[in-house]
Amino acid sequence: MISREDAAEILLNIGAVSLNAVNPFKYASGMLSPIYTDCRMLISFPNERKEIVQSFIEYIDNSIGKQNIDTIVGVGHSGISLATWLGEELKLPIAYTRTSAKDHGKGKQIEGVLKNGCKALLISDIMSTETDIPIAVKTVRDNGCDVVGCLTIFSNKLGIIENFLHKENIKFHYLTDLETLLSVALTKNKISFDEKNNINDWVKNPETWDKARKEKLEKFLTENKEKVAETLLKIKAVTLNTEKPYRFVSGILSPIYTDCRLLMSYPKEWDSVINSMINLIVNEIGIQNIDVIAGTATAGISHAAYLAKKLNLPMIYVKSSEEEYGKKTRIEGRLKNGSKVLLIEDLISTGGSSISSIKAVREAGGVVENCLAIFTYGMDAAQKSFEQERIKLIALTDFANLVGVAVKENYIRSNEKDLILEWANDTAGWGKKMGFE
Image 1: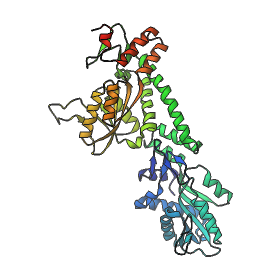
Image 2: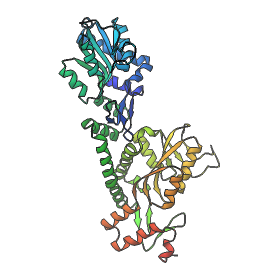
Image 3: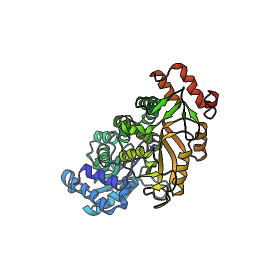
Image 4: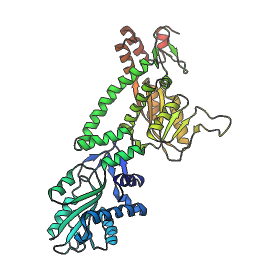
């Protein structure tokens, strides 16, 4: 019999497991969940379903005994194919139950023959929150039969169905469970720690999980903006000077200069920033909505590389212009047509270089809907450019938060705060207004 880890790996390999905390799945019970395990995918994979059915047979031989079963009963649509394969292997008759009687024909709730007094083995795909199994138990018993056991491929281990079966003195068994699935998925780099933690939070309180997640995310966003700002100031990735302002490539004079590339030289701080990115990806974008991580050349490349490694995703990077030699392309790396691309930036000022990179990826066949940056100056021009291109801009921290932290941590004097914030209101005219040009 295959181990729980082997069964979990089968489900992962056939694409039976989907994750989405951003737009949670709704179960038949109405409950929202960040994970959906669809064991029905098994019908399309002959070798894998053979392994699953063989494991059921071995369990029956060891724990129930074929002689103690008269009929295999599939629970709902998903149980029909499983009951068919198992019945054929064991040379036993099968039947299946509906969640409610048909409103036409003979109006039956059971298809197939269940003789009075027969011993029925229920088989379903999953134990979760659905009422299919309790309804099947009642239906079989109402037909004068005994339920000798219930087998499923997977259990979310919420305890709802398990507690019911235990109360009804019905022996049950599942080939794998959520805890095992998450452990295997993490080992195989199929999920991130943040996704696993999200799902564990759901298991603890499935009814209130979505509300609690949103509240937790809001708190994280607020606290993280200050935390990242503190990090940038600490490693001097951001410097503030109201006496000798800096000149940007665009010609704008600014009392603030940001160089997030310095994070590369501080592993601990850099790892913390990348982990913050992952948290935002899981909760605001959804890893399932990303096929490729893209970095902008050159400042975004290292951050994109770090992130791609942690998420086990392919990576590309986008150059500012085509080279006159080689492939003469702006995109380095492999980009499949239709791939969903997340653009990674170190900082956003006017947004011009980011928009240029987005257009280059789109022209190469990529789909870009989000841009994730470490820092943004919050310029109106940038916001308008992203909105015009229908791009959601997400930044770990911003100008206003950074200035606030700088005052609190004594990086600047309180009387300098207004001068610096004034720059955000008139970036183009600030230098002249302050007498620097």
